[in-house]
Amino acid sequence: MQNESCQNEEYTHLGQRRFLNVLVTGHRMNRMGEARDGVAKKVQAALRGVLDVLSQKTLQQGRQFRLFSGSADGTDAMAWAWWRDKAQSQDEHGAYYCVSPTPPDWLQELQKLQKLSREGVRSGILAVDSIAPAEGVHGPWHAISDDYKLLMADLLVAVWDGQPPRGCEGGTVRLIHEALRRRTPVLWIRGDAAHVGDLMSERQDPMDTVLLDISPEQIPEHFQLCTLEAVVGLVQRLCQPAEKVSGPMVEADPGQRKTWAGFWHTLFFRLLSPLWRIKPILSPVRAWRGPDALVQGSRLGKAFWQSFDGLDRVATHYANLHRDAVVWSHLLSSLAVFGAVAGAIAFLAAPDSIWASFELLTLLGVGAIVWFGQPKKRHAAWRDRWMLGRQAAEAMRVSALLYPQMASLPALYRLSEHGKDIDLQGQARMLAIQRLRDAEPPQGEQGQPYFLKTQFSPLKKALKGLLDDQMSYHRKTAQRYESTHRRLKWLTNAVFFLALGTVIVHLAGVLDHVRWIEEQDWLLFLTAYFPALAAALESIAIEFELGRLAHNSETMQKKLQVHRDLLDSCRSEADFLTLRRLAIRTAETLYAEHDGWVGLMDIHQLGIPA
Image 1 (tube, rainbow, N blue to C red):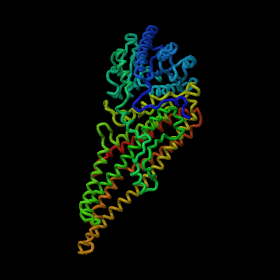
Image 2 (cartoon, rainbow, N blue to C red; image 1 turned 45 degrees about the vertical axis):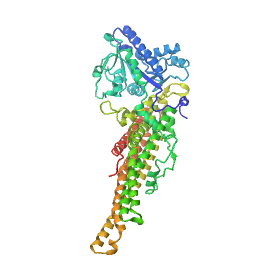
Image 3 (spheres, helix red, strand yellow; image 1 turned 90 degrees about the vertical axis):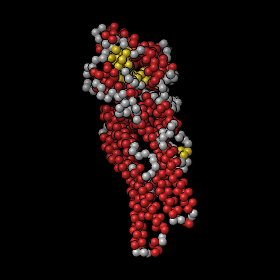
Image 4 (cartoon, rainbow, N blue to C red; image 1 turned 60 degrees about the vertical axis):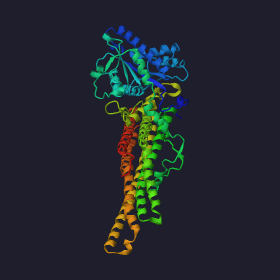
């Protein structure tokens, strides 16, 4: 079964968000200056004021507020104290999650307060292990907790003195630096004695610039003083549905509607290779989440997987439409030549008007197919919906592997290369990020803390299930595409050389004045129509990239087999860090292959056949 805590989640449309996640981070007490007590009080007052505004305005915007923080003294303890006071007074306070290498000192107090929370509002602890690690491995444990916190953060509130890092693993500066690179908005509360409590915000909208090469010393240059009123505006912007990206995808979801899409191109390829399965006429589009071990081990609830299903259906449906359109547009284009030649030779003794009408209808058919497949004022092109849906769905699938590992896919944050214009791949990644941030954090049995180290067995099972599933998929794809590509090439060559042979026979008959050859009009039919048919078949092969995709799938299967062999070396909880690294490498490999597929298919646009 999936995480039972998520069974009561209502379906969340792609354009909606349920939560606003705020991550609080900052210095420990020993870095708040010499006048620690005075600085700490001012910092705490400023932090409480910001959290009050954030929680109140989030609820007014129709979302639930969730607070994420760590387990250290200083800023983390201040964030916990704010939530504790709100919970004890029964104020609207949202949920609180402590994410750290080991449980916080206030674990038992938090578990008591969980019972006072409103129904539907949950809190919890996520940690690497229940006890402190051996000396020398603090760094990786801090990196694990930081990775998960940054994954979930819609907004980072940081207490920082503006000085460079002092070599501490999992430090405040590193979190701010990485948040800026991921385009996560940052509110900076000054923690230095000269400006303690001042509130700073970024000079530009995080979506307007990509701070890839910024150094920690340059971070303060990108901030300016702001007020709590500016925080209100920030909350309103963060709570707006991403309709520009996700709204059209919701409308495009075919749901359980029965459709012809996919029947025609699968029928065409089935005539070439028995490895193709013909899509039934008027059948609904079905989503494929992956193996049960992945779905159950992901700790992601029903809302996440329903969103995935919608994107997967959109991708499959519009892929079917696009592929049908490619096959029909090229075949109809060749049939237009058929009609022209048939009219010239009075084929089947039909009137010229019949063949002229046939030729006109085929050309109108090509034009209609291309017109329907092109982008409209309110609708994206079939190909673009296919690409966007598939990229978002695949990003969610590999992220489902990493989510219970408290890890994220680095490629997920490449929203665009430069500037504020997010490309199609960036839009797909943004959808995946939003779905992950709306997920419930994983919990242990009966609401106990979630300890990553103790989840070794289900995490290994999930990775094994995904690897086996993807290896099987690529093996079958390589076989099917290679078989189809080989036979399509054979058919194309046969049609072309048949036309060439006919031309040679006809030329020889003309030169030798062989009357019966000169009078055979059907020879003209073959010499004119068959080259057009061969060109159409070759164009279909090029558009589908069958040969390259078969080669890529064969290569991918070999790469995944290497990962599968390495998985067998992970045998116990002592290998949990090795297992986590292998899961990240597997996710990166799968997503890199998918990016390569996107680059390959991106050059093929639906247009008028040449």
